[in-house]
Amino acid sequence: MAKSKTKTRFACTACGYSTPKWMGRCPECGEWNTLEEELIEAAGARPSLSPKSISKPVPIGQIDAHGGEVRVRTGLSELDNVLGGGLVSGSITLLGGDPGVGKSTLLLMACERFASKGLPVLYVSGEESTRQIQLRAQRLGVTSDSLLVLAHTDWEHIERTAREAKPVVMVVDSVQTVAVPHLTSIPGSVGQVREVAHRAMLFAKQTGTSVLLVGHVTKQGDIAGPKVLEHFVDTVLHFEGDGRSALRVLRTVKNRFGAAGELGLFEMVDHGMRQVPDASARLLAERVADAAGTAVTAALEGSRPMLSEVQALVGPASPGNPARTCVGVDRTRVLMLAAVLGKCGIPLHDRDLFVNAAGGVRLGEPAADLAILAAASSSLLDLAVPDDVVLIGEVGLVGEVRAVSHPQLRLKEAARHGFRRVFGPRSLAAEAPEGVHVIGVRTVRELLDQLFG
Ligand code: TYD
Ligand code: MG
Image (cartoon, rainbow, N blue to C red; front, side):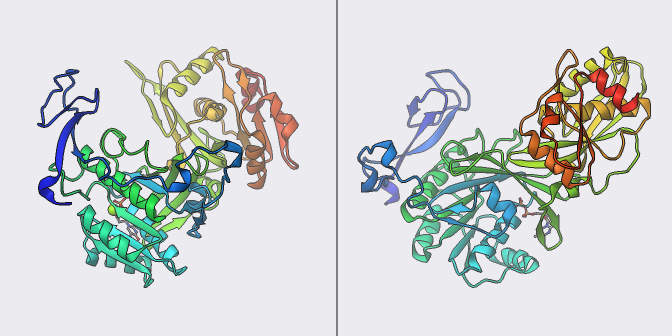
């Protein structure tokens, strides 16, 4: 396409108004900074997505759900599971995460796994030179000849190269550094990111190549601005680390080919990313026995049970507003639990309270309530929760202990790691696996009596 023929316009992301010139404020809806540059192309200039076979409507029952769906596995089970059983051919995946969390490392390792099966793989980097990539590759032991590396930032060149090289898997690291030449906006702007990702998607669907886009998370926590890519890619993965530990969590935020909410665990070591197949063992490894202020819960991440330690520290009464510091647990939930404890004779209203999910995990589920509550009361009373106890259960505002989802998965995980007693809602008793004694409690008061009474 000749550059001179290509025209762009600026469209308002809030109301759709378009204008040939950029303006700071949309004259239609009055919003500021919503005009984004986009390409105007003649009808037919843009390649169409639909092959002939899907241009007619078909009865839903006659569609072969798995027809044409080919998956390639990396052999890194922590990654394959998060992808829903491997990477689907022709799919487009966005891997988001903070700079430095290990996205390039993880994907280079995945590329090596594909390439060592003899699959042609293209790793495109707009951030690092081939020399830098090679240095990283040396560190990771990545040597496959089927892995091609390209350091470039012009999407059109990248696409041409890819059409020649015909890779089965292509990584674009990162979508914010690659640009389409016709747009005048800088790489990383919303217009560029959207255009590059759109073209990458067309390329993936037309050629059957699985494309993985790396996206840096901006300060607001969104991938490349206002989550512009998440709705049209097939799969969105987030790679997270808390900066405190080497533990890295890979999460499925969205997946058109599998369940969302799945989780993979890795550890950053000096020769790359190591899988952590037994999350519970890893999270409990540093636990101190018989210490007051800790309790273990069986959390569920996607379909994966994980035993995690909740730590609490109740400080002495201090003047002014008491501190409420929460790491890895929901603050609002902790405030509510502190209020419930107050009703049960464990006053926290004038004391500092620190709650921490150990190991850098996030306990977002209400099923962790009982453990948070036990850890806080244990700290205040200076009495340890016995070593062989796991606590599972949601706590309501009147102090009632409520049922949790997938109790069996959680109880089995507790049994597998040698825990012999589980405190939880009464309904849990019916599910107890061999070797585990379930102590059903109806209320928080009952729990406190049983644990510390
Ligand atoms: P990187 O994969 O470059 O992060 P991202 O692509 O998400 O920005 O990883 C960067 C960090 O990882 C860097 O600080 C060094 C560290 N690292 C290791 O600890 N071990 C390794 O084997 C590698 C390659 C990097
Ligand atoms: Mg990187």
